[in-house]
Length: 323
Image (cartoon, rainbow, N blue to C red):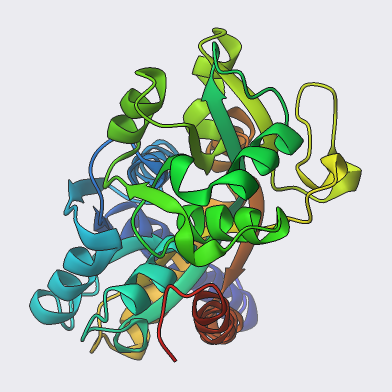
């Protein structure tokens, strides 16, 4: 064998060894994901779906999920920022709900103190009523809320989150005072669902996935989704197509603690990039009815900053945050 061919052979072996090491390192990744809410809700579902996709695809050796509920994620983010600084194996699920909740709760901890990693999914809001409710359509609900905003009770996620914002914007579109809505926040999707099914509230609002099984079982009536009018179907009616000018999408994402190194940030971002492309994750999106809205790195950091500014403007306009 010539020296040239020997050199090529050694290079090939070295490249194979490096590739094997990288694959092995990825497979050895051990991650922790915090869902800053009670079990059963959207953040918890997202965290456990990530756990499933990351382990089944071999991207991570193990993924531990923990729940830290309370105040729209304010308690969870405080724990992430204060207790997990520099921990390159920790992620926290968050989303539009947290952006609003931190503002309305006047949290001393902000998303600017976290390390943005990636936006994962988007999901339109669904408004539902108990199956035996006299309210049949979005116009029926609009008429009720215009007549007396305080008499119409809403069950949804934490105060200031996307559910709360959507309820306030529905009232505004119906011609009612959005500052007078009677919104009851719940820290977990299971608790809110129980209140709706038990007839303790007029209507419920959350992501469609949290209501789907009860809608299909005939226990809840879907009034409509906050989708564009063009996305309306007979089974999935749009609020906007019914003449109520409301269109809003929730999104969910992951952030890491402050103080992680550039290499740690890259490793977490690479893991999310691989997960987003995996067949395991794509199957979960399809099963859950979540829209793929994946964006990572600096592009996501820019979106997060813009969403914080936009949400503050909306919350101020509907009286949920004082200017």
